[in-house]
Amino acid sequence: MNYCSACGAPVTKKIPAGDNLPRFVCDTCQAIHYHNPKIVVGCIPEWDGHILLCRRAIEPKSGLWTFPAGFMEIGESTEQAAVRETLEESQAQVERICLFAVLSLPHIGQAYLVFRGPMGSPDFGAGEESLEVQLFSLSAIPWDEIAFPVVKDALCRYVDDVTRSEFQVHVATLPDRLT
Ligand SMILES: [Zn+2]
Image (cartoon, rainbow, N blue to C red; front, side):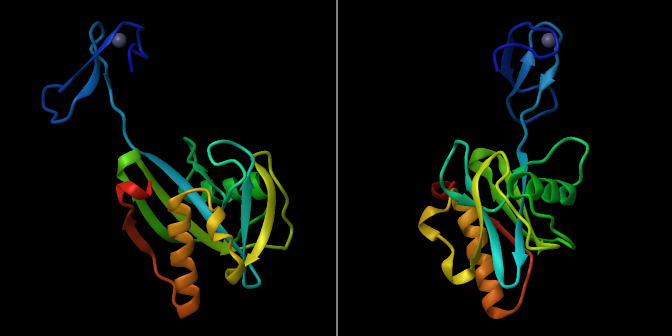
C-alpha cells in the first residue's frame, strides 16, 4: 500500500501506539490500514456417492479442478457463501450443508471454511468461472489435476472420512510449501 484509501496521502509502515505489528499508517489523517486474512468458503456438493467438481475457467490454475469456493462477501454468512459459490460455479443447489474443514494458510493470509452437503437434484452446469462441471466417484477424482494444494488436502480428508464412514470437522494448517 502506498497511499491512504481514506484521504489519498502517502502512508508509512510503522507500529501504531498500543499495537505490536507494523501497519500502514497515513501520514496525514493518521488512519491505520489493517491487512487481515481473508476467508475463503468452499463446498463439496454430494450426489449419490459422487462429488461435484468444477474445472476452472479463470486464472490462477485455469483448466484444473476444484470444488466450488471463493471469497466471502460482506453481508453474508459462511453457509450462505458456500451455497452461493456452489450455485455460481456449478449451477447446483446444495442443501443441509455442514462444516467439514477449517484449513489455515497463514503464509498467504487465508483461511478456508469447507462445507459439504447433498445436492437437491442432479442438476448442474458450468457457471461463468467454470469450463465444465462433472460428478466424480471418489475413486475417479483427478488428483493430478487439482487446482490448489488446499483443495487437494480437503478432498483427501473427505475421501478418508467417507472410507471410514465417519465424518469429523477437520482443523488443520497447511505448511508453507503446500500453499
Ligand atoms: Zn489518510
